[in-house]
Structures are given as C-alpha cells and as structure tokens.
Image 1 (cartoon, helix red, strand yellow):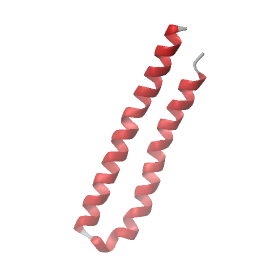
Image 2 (cartoon, one colour):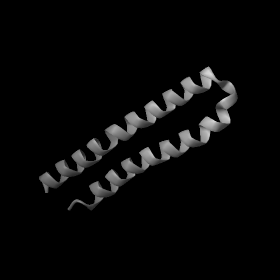
Image 3 (cartoon, rainbow, N blue to C red):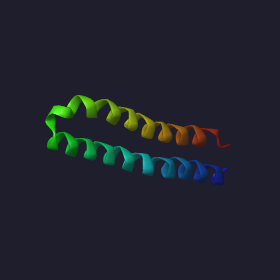
Image 4 (tube, rainbow, N blue to C red):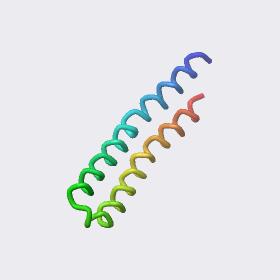
Length: 70
C-alpha cells in the first residue's frame, strides 16, 4: 500500500514538472513575440493556446496514470 502511494506521488510529480515548465516557456515566448510585433497578436495567440493545451494534456495523462496505479 505504501509503495503505491509513493508511485502515485512520483507519477503526478514527475508528470507535471515539464508541462508546467513548457506552459511557462510558451507564454513567455508568446509575450516576447507580441512585444516585438503587436500587430501579430492574432497570429500568435491561437498557436500559443494550442501548444499550451497540448502541454496541459501531458499533465492530465500523468494524472490518469497516477489514478490507475493500484
């Protein structure tokens, strides 16, 4: 029982570190791009949101794996 709890904690912990970093990097780069070229906001916003959603999906997969550990 205790090893399962540790495995769940590691799965969600390790599975959320890189997606969190990626979302921060995506947002920072998008804001830098918009700062350099404000007219391109519409062209930058949609791909930024898509990439953030894909990165967030990885964290959700890690959560599903953590719940599936018995």
